Image 1: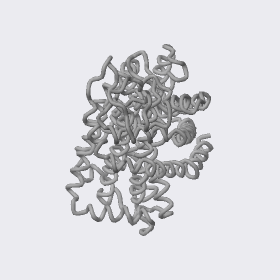
Image 2 (image 1 turned 180 degrees about the vertical axis):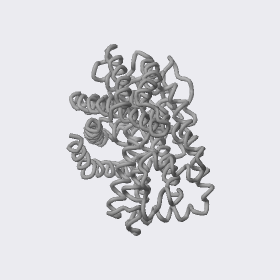
Image 3 (image 1 turned 45 degrees about the vertical axis):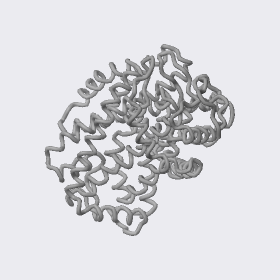
Image 4 (image 1 turned 135 degrees about the horizontal axis):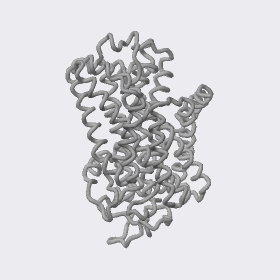
Length: 478
């Protein structure tokens, strides 16, 4: 069954999803006037200025950003990049960059739509995301329900098991920690946080996600500085391998195709642009303009791939020849390769720190994935009080089961449901893109004025919302 689901997943990713995501990234880049380049300065400025305290104890833009970052930055950035290099050669890194740069525009559009179509929630936050903008923008609750169910299986159950299994496997291999002990530990530290709801998750990830990213980047920077004379060679190898100009790198066969497919797939798994996952977190934030949150979430793709995943690539490609070789690859795989590569440069003392970072990366993904799932439970249950508590119990159980039982068939099936949710989301954001384009044009014309949808000449029509309807201080003029 695992092989069957795996074969379906490989076919869907290779022949459908990657092509759709690349096409969507190109389309949104053109329609937004290359928002990821033209408004990059706004992304950085808005992200660092978005930690203001919000009214009614809600979630700030920065907290919503870190919830999304917590889910994005996970084992894919450490283990996934290593796998991409081993199976696709160093050139896979180049295609990860391309996917990320295109995906930044897609991430902007889906996060902006999540803000535009969000609704008020009793706890002082908001709810939104693909299920909500599909229902309210495309007038199809049935399509929204299918999306929500797919996301719940992927991010509410299976991916929680994946992250827990990564943690237990890492601790067992490094320090011989019994898997049952890891299961108990994860239950103890996960239950109090997820049962505290989205606000508590946001407070934890606000500290955890930036901290782990900074520490990991510092390790990579030290290694890069130690090998500063090798930077040109590493970049040359990446570019040559990306276009099949150096065959046989790392024992890879397939040249350009192998680099493209592995780089694209690992990049998409890591940065989540277009999957319809991160918009669920983006919608919960208080912000003055929907495009502002779109820009902040787009910056999350840049941090995830261009910074963190690239850090892993440079750690591996600068490793000692007995750890990783361009000619023979490596006998190690995944996180073990990244850890050994860092140790070959900095010494054995770095190994415990790498293991701790892998733990934190995976654990933060458990919390980020939970936040996505709760938004969709709320959509399915119309805000029933029982729904979130059932989900939180499932999350805790999933971390325990995942720690002790590697369920490959479940994981492969979750890849299929994730592909289904991504395809549904891509169709929706292409059809609804005009609303995000209008919000972006309004932001560019009035960057410091709170957004109001009513009678807004930049919008394609009347937005079905009760959120962005406050009176305008000054009328919008095109």
